[in-house]
Amino acid sequence: MGERSSVAELVGSLKRELNRYSPGEKLPSSRVLVERHRVSPVTVSRALAQLAAEGLVVTRPGAGAFRAQPRTDTARPGDTSWQEVTLSADAATELVPRAVDASGVLVTLAPPPPGVVEFNGGYLHPSLQPEQAMAAALARAGRRPGAWGRPPADGLPELREWFARAIGPTVGAAEVLVTAGGQAALTTALRALAPPGAPVLVESPTYPGMLAIARAAGLRPVPVPVDARGVRTELLAAAFRATGARVFVCQPLFQNPTGAVLAPDRRAEVLRIARAAGAFVIEDDFARRLVHDDAGPLPAPLAADDPDGVVVHVSSLTKVTSPSLRVAALAARGPVLERLRAIHVVDTFFVPRPLQEATLELVGAPAWARHLRAVAVELKTRRDTLTSALGLHLPELALPHIPSGGYHLWLRLPDGTDEAALVAAALRAGAAVAPGRPYFSAEPPAGHLRLSFAGVAGPTEIVEGVRRLRAACDEVLEERVTRH
Image 1 (tube, one colour):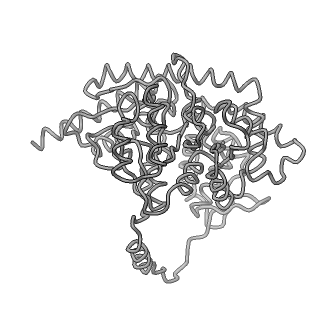
Image 2 (cartoon, helix red, strand yellow):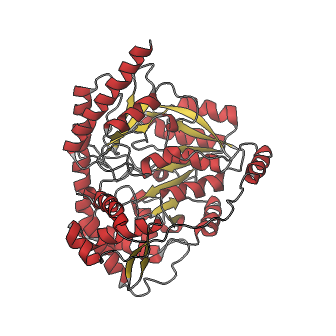
Image 3 (tube, rainbow, N blue to C red):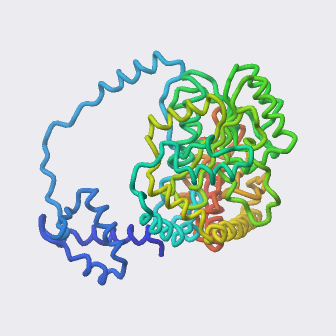
């Protein structure tokens, strides 16, 4: 049983037991709870912390946990209605309102209830994460001289050099900034390159987190369609001409959500078109370390073929390690680097030094290469299992492309299918899936689902999840027939 589900079950048990105790009465000790419920001390600690956060218990260091007193607060509730006027007044003066819908991001961050198959996850399942290697790296890093001191604002030189080598020989450590995860790097890049109200070209469909960043910055995402060979360059050129945009955000390798790889002839064309438009290309290289075991040699990042500073490159270690290892890099050359550096420093000061030191320890250990190989093998197995199960049980869901990297499949629903109803029915059936609508910056051409195979426990759970999704599809189709 996973730690997360153990904590949830213990919280439920303790809530049922709370009525046995009077307000202020002490609960059994942690040792007793460990023995009674047969869980680890860490599980007990996390369960009590959750109950304390909900106001049900009070923990006192050295004394234990006590049932909380009933709330007697009768103070007048605050009136926040004034904020509607203020926020609306701000929006009226903006070219693009900065109201942000984070639902497309939260669907991949919020864990589903226990027992639900997590097809909506955005990270590796705990069994695929290098937990032992990360723990060992963190322990070694903590003992390094100066490990808890203030790091350089741009990042540790050794870590910047490591990221630079991963991009290619044309990029030097001096052109790299270490950031607190890929999302932070994308935020910095968009803020640096486009003023509020400006258009920014994005792939369609594309990563909802990037769309949320753009809208929060007051930018106008303009979609450029993607096919099996990546962004359609003839439409990219037309979009630059029509909008006057100065930024294009793309994922050339295992694009999210389609899994497409930018074709060789289109790589040079993207750079040529952007250079002619006097525009930057933000290259989100999020999936390079999520290659599958059957993939051939990977193309180099766009930044490796860019001597003119057109590309601002983003790469992250989070996806292939852990959601909490939020270490990434921004790479750029020319005057824009100073602007990126200034925004990065103002927003975050620096990435905590112990985390950077631990990252260096992790990627420099023999276990790192073994981890990457294991992930490549496991992702291929899971992809093949999900593809086969879908073909057998849900042939009506179109799978236009089977990727050789990344962690998900992108499915097109039959015409007329209610996407939202299917997502809700799937959750009722015990399978959490990501709806396709948040991946489009404009009206989608059809309903879609994104199914992740990285966040589930393994092939057996994948097959069970597809079985549950089949039941959800039957429910939605039956309702549709009944209505008509």
